[in-house]
Image (cartoon, rainbow, N blue to C red; front, side, top):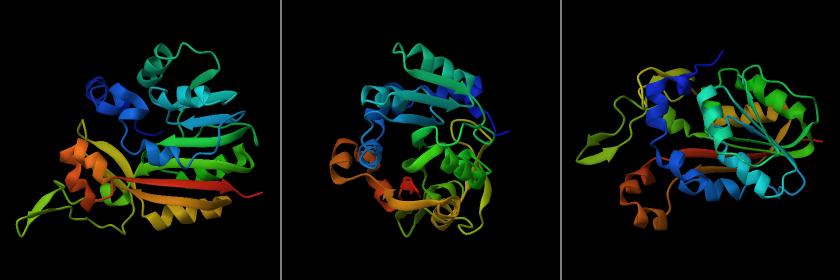
Amino acid sequence: MAQNIYDDPAFFQAYSRLPRSKGGLDAAPEWPSLRALLPALNGLRVLDLGCGYGWFCRWALASGATEVTGVDLSARMLDRARDMTPEPGITYVQADLESFGLRDASVDLVYSSLAFHYVEDLQGLFRRAAAWLTPGASFVFSVEHPIYTAPRAPGWAIVDGREVWPLDRYLQEGVRTTNWLADGVVKQHRTIGTYVRLLREAGFTLLAIDEWGPGETQIQHNPDWARERDRPMFLLIAARRDA
């Protein structure tokens, strides 16, 4: 079973203060780029893996999806999602993504935001996702960029008077323990090549890959993000299940 750090009271309280926790999709800087990778949702059955507060689930329903299912390991996250979701049409399920299952060909879009870097058996999850999707359907997700999951502690350093993001064993994949919002947060480091290989082996065709970093307009509004131009924060991927 994956680490359920989001049900830790101190972690959950700290997470709830983040801008994206307060403002939802509009407060997630990568959301416009991720949204551009999505198909038209009208009439689709949508599955959100690692749904958190349910922000995407509610957006999908408002965008025309006929059925939306949000899955998360954290009871606290799902309680918050249900409290924030007055609309019918969304089902929230507590489950570990390592073992969650659905009927074959039962959904038309699988989506996930910043959850898969917690999953150890990503190969198994990708294969199950391919089975859940109808032929030709979309699989769109984001993860922390592999450059971000392989930093040399304590992260940013000063080299020749300039801030840099030094890497630690980038090609050595596996467990990385970080102190983000709480001590001992377990994540899985993978290279971009591994994400692409696992998708292809599971029966997906890669449609788009975006090593996301803030644009000039975003930096003008958020000057503190300027140094993020030196290190992609997120990896955004869109794929299609082969027929």
